[in-house]
Amino acid sequence: MASSEPIVPSSSVSPRGSANHAATRTAAGRLRVAVPSVAERVADELRLQLAEGALLPGTRLTESTIAEDLGVSRNTVREAFVELASERLVVRHPNRGVFVASLEAGDVHDVYTVRRAIEVSALRAGGSPEDVAAVRAAVEEGKRAAAASDDEALGTANQHFHGAIVAMAGSPRLNSIMGQVLAEMRLFFHKATVDAQFYQHYLPDNEAICLALEAGELDRAADLLQAYLDRSEDNLSEVHGEAGTD
Amino acid sequence: MASSEPIVPSSSVSPRGSANHAATRTAAGRLRVAVPSVAERVADELRLQLAEGALLPGTRLTESTIAEDLGVSRNTVREAFVELASERLVVRHPNRGVFVASLEAGDVHDVYTVRRAIEVSALRAGGSPEDVAAVRAAVEEGKRAAAASDDEALGTANQHFHGAIVAMAGSPRLNSIMGQVLAEMRLFFHKATVDAQFYQHYLPDNEAICLALEAGELDRAADLLQAYLDRSEDNLSEVHGEAGTD
DNA sequence: ATCGAAGGATTGTTGAACAATCCGTAAATT
DNA sequence: AATTTACGGATTGTTCAACAATCCTTCGAT
Image (cartoon, rainbow over all chains, first blue to last red; front, side):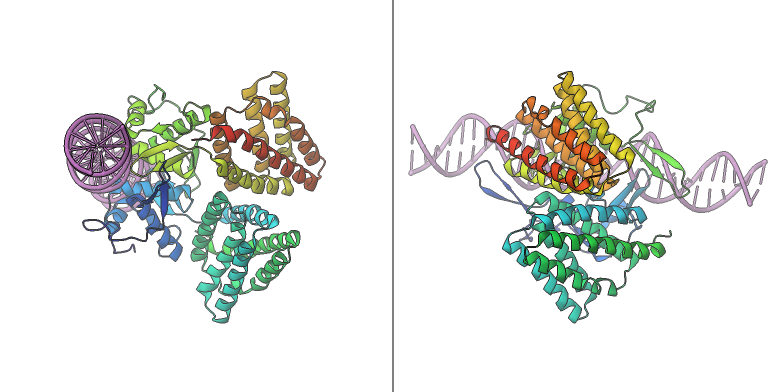
């Protein structure tokens, strides 16, 4: 279930972990590489497993089990849980444990409400040529994935597309919110095992939105995106009907 | 500094805490009152002190001190810190401690970017008559506060106004995001000790936006709000110039 | 079949311990 | 005198062990 690889090194220091995680700045401006704390690494590992579908919605996450699996203390796992719960990836039931979050009917609508607000706003404001290029890149990435019939890649390409749209705003907070929302959606897709055709359907929309964006017709692009999201929500709600019957 | 009142009851159960906090629902649908965990109560207490300005931006929060002050364990304080950090109310410097967050120049702009996205979107979508009534109520609340020259009340009325706008969307996630954003702004105001006149200035705007909303002219209301937020950000950025020099 | 009483398991919370890290100060060096 | 080095105290990061409180299941009684 969980990875067999322990989170903490057996002894001594870790040689050179991928340290692109975070960095703090001293008063003098000296850059200090922030080694992610163990708790953060636990959260990262769980986030990864959630994204990969290794942990499906509804699954119970027992503190002691995860602590052993990852070779860390129960308290540390707890800290990770607090973080994941604040991201809504996990739900805490007092005295009962934490469970992988599961999007109910209302949640799907809610998530789309957030997406509409954020994505449309970002699109309407436009972005630098580089930002637009990133959107275009995501569109092409999707086309390639479709050509190769790689469903997995198609899904991530689609997420890149919407991520790139939000990134146009250049707002760390919006990016982080969007990141969380996309993580929630990934959770849902794994639960519902959404049809691979699902994304195919939206490739032309992405193209159209991107074209409008490149042409500087921001309002039209925004309207297209809005319609896209409305339609997407409807489709997903149907899918949900047969999925969320527990 | 911190409240002298301990967070945990000296013994036995708490008689009847204000239990409007959260409630979980069993499979059968039975309602279970969720007694907030100690960690959550610590987080609540800290949030309160942050909102009241008892803890100013930049202040260091020492784990052991807070643990003693609130009569809880250091580990519990840590859990609360994780939560507050995820809300950006507090910043964690690895191995150095946690500090009350402080909005820098870029943060002010970023916060307003989020507000523009969320508030304008909610306003453009409109809401039920009750939702609109809540917005109107906040406007009147502001007028009363202005008449009474109650700066404190004027500020909260303004937050109610913007909160009511977002609430129109009926989205728990948007509400929670807005709540966090407003909490961040409160933090900033305490740091900058913004002029009391500040809000006075915007009373007519609130009235105008509300009127447009009540008239069903959603797009116009949205445009007004957008302009309002742009102007507000400019004002605040000026104020910031003399405040964030550290 | 319904209800209630153990029993076991898990969570919530604490307290203590220890290594790692940081910061300020004093000593040593240039 | 200025800079570097070394040291010591303080605080964080993390673990461990314990215990009460709570939940879920099973078993037994009605």
